[in-house]
Image 1: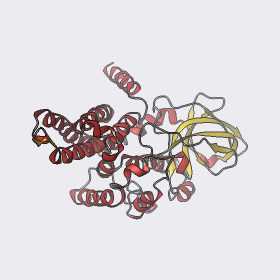
Image 2: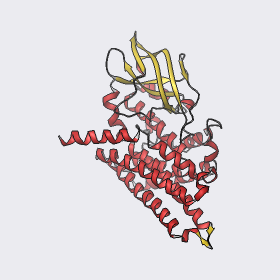
Image 3: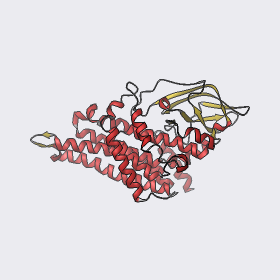
Image 4: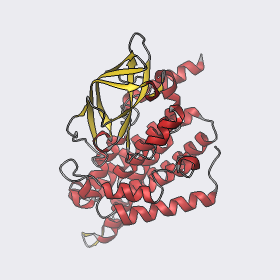
Length: 369
């Protein structure tokens, strides 16, 4: 799929902005208290009704068949208001795309319309967890073991999970229905950020699944390439948080007086604001270039480096955005402390930041041989 046409991009951008304003902006802090407050199921349902949960699905499966450029723009605007909802869309889209790529039509028919799908977004593609084992039995498999920190598990209907095929060294992907007997979840885990996109540990005590639920028998080799398509979207999520931090900091600086003048006139405040603005603007250009490259089937290295750069710079920008507000930046009321936590959490998408850097270096060295 090539780059998006400008009309489609503008239409989805407008939809995302309206949705963020109506559904997210005023209640993001309230829903960030999960698991000690309710999950924002209303926003998820509203996102489904306007088509935001089906953006990457083909029309034959109830979607609009858009590419990563459109999807990334949507996440950018949603993340300015509430990064948790943007993260839910990304995690669900990863699971949907895995099901589309590797799943049988009957499985797609049944689960692509699920309320939400869980996915191990915090695991490194180069080193998928091996805590669950799959043993061949009759016409199916018996799954047993534990998978930690599964994103959306507390609110999902089914999950795409890795499992070691017994007797081999291969890690496969399976689709598991979370209502299957023998499958249990821990209590929701209180995470650093993105608390509205909840995580939990998954334990499987010998559950039998049909062979149809084996999605990809060699995920260890296929999955790293699969994630490249989604790295621009994760970068857009981080940059959206930085852009939201800039808007909040700017609005505060234009209203607050100190030492007889509005604080945006103070040189230090302007310097902090400029730091955030530069990162937000350059980050948007970067994830846009990443997304277009992915949609056109090129520039794999750009997707790898761009994610690392975008997420780490976004964390830096949000820190400066907090400082503009002084002590108020560290309390809940303005949303800046939430953005700081969210930005750090996003750095862990597709594995911890230091691990991603090492994997990038190894890839570069291999290419140079």
